[in-house]
Length: 238
Image: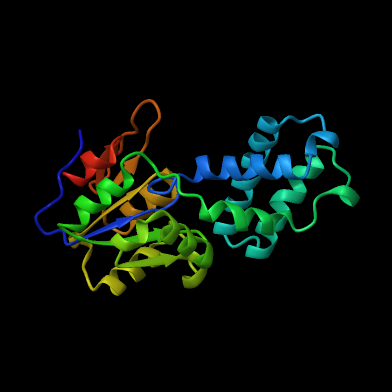
């Protein structure tokens, strides 16, 4: 069961990647372009889909380390590619140079969104003020929201890079509330990652919804869990 927004709500805080902006879809297209551009099939037995899947695993591991403060932004950006190439058996001497920068040039300008994202933002913006809370990099995320049309509906965005603190840290959510000038009972939050978004939002005492397009629903006895969202338009009408 999904809970309706309380009458006290004035703000809707939203995650960006894979909640509004289709990170997986856009990243896959960018990676396939890089595979083709650098003719990686000549240097490895990994076909393009295997390359994408391997990169996703390596990248996810690096993001977890980054969110814990174990690696820097610079290490994350480059090592996720060099480690992937190493695992693919591509010698360091022939690995594409600065491929991480090529990826950052290609991916953020892609405009694939999650289903009904813009329509939901339009509806929500008629009733509430909106803010984005993201663990991404400041410049990259700003390019995404401007290129995709998300930016016109958003009052402000908080990134972990600019703040120096990442979700699920409660300070991240507290900072967003201070910036919005609101209290926790005046906010609802929606995100797709259970560990960082849902547990982080509930830990900050925000009514928090889990955006999940996969099979099944995850239950929580936490009083701040609003339920599982399968449709952004339905969420906008709560």
